[in-house]
Amino acid sequence: MILEMLLGLLVSFVVTAAFGRFLIPKLREMKAGQSIREDGPVWHMAKQGTPTMGGLMFIVGIGAALFTVGFPALLDGRWGHVIVFGFALIYAAIGFLDDYEKLKKKQNLGLTASQKFLLQLVVAIVLVLVLRLSGFLTPSLHIPFFMDRPPLQLPEIVYFIFAAFVIVGTVNAVNITDGVDGLASGVSLPVAICFGALALHWGVLYAELGLFAGALAGGLIGFLIYNFNPAKVFMGDTGSLFLGGAICGIAFAMNVPLVLIPVGAVYIAETLSDVIQVVYYKATGGKRFFRMAPLHHHFEMGGLTGRGKKWKERKVFTVFTLVSAVFAVIAYLSVYLRYGA
Image (tube, rainbow, N blue to C red; front, side, top):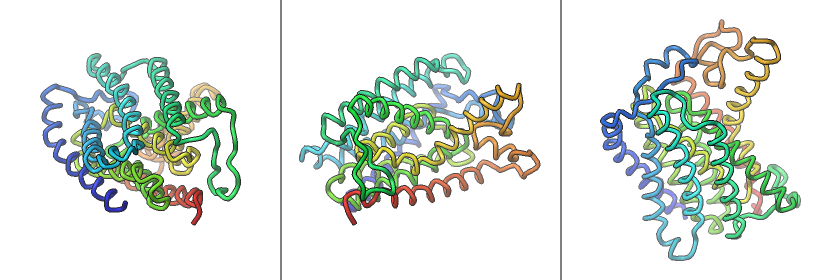
């Protein structure tokens, strides 16, 4: 199983890295340049015109790994990796529509919030239904760090509502994290490795999902060749929504959705910083709690007082990725005993 995961990682990495050499010039030729938010850090305006929709690179790389290395699993009737990939692919399609609208309008505004929410909600419900009918999950919640206790049983409809809320929230949290060169990729890499480690520990039960986790890690490493600061390409909503869908998909397919709390700690912090900023701004009549939200911009701007040293993008990437790695270890420890030691 570990050989299959490593092979999936390698195939995904090689295909992603190779496809990037073709895709980036093609995106430039198509004038698929990113429009930068005017309310973001002023120095980010220098990124204007950097090709976007680069997430297509790791989507192709992951797909190549799943349908080559994972082909024997398909013949054996194990479809978990394809179900998760298909789910993430639909989210990528929503992101692609959003990116296309931004490019067409030549500004950082794509689909409306209500359009994105409705589309994401429908896809989330479909995923949970498919996983439920396929026998991957049950309407029960295994509580991290309390794997020795019976799971919390929920009525079917309550579980569906909970799952839809978690999926849409997580997908958008990953999207919010994609605001600094390489950040969403770097933060998501330990998350993929965590799920791969869980699949290895739990054995053949989740072998194909371990392959998916390995392929996801390989694709992100391959993408970072081009996305690390200074970025030659951005993943766009095409890539960030795919990432969010992939992470949610594998968590629910492993039937441990609450592991998203520790493993997604950075995503949660990024989202909460946005929420806190908006609430505080309205409650105080225009004052800001953070120098700028989301959280990565806050550190770029020098912290709460603004007197701290401004963090360069590479430092934001390094610190946030290390924090994600720490929480990935915590997440692993919180649920690995689900099937015994």
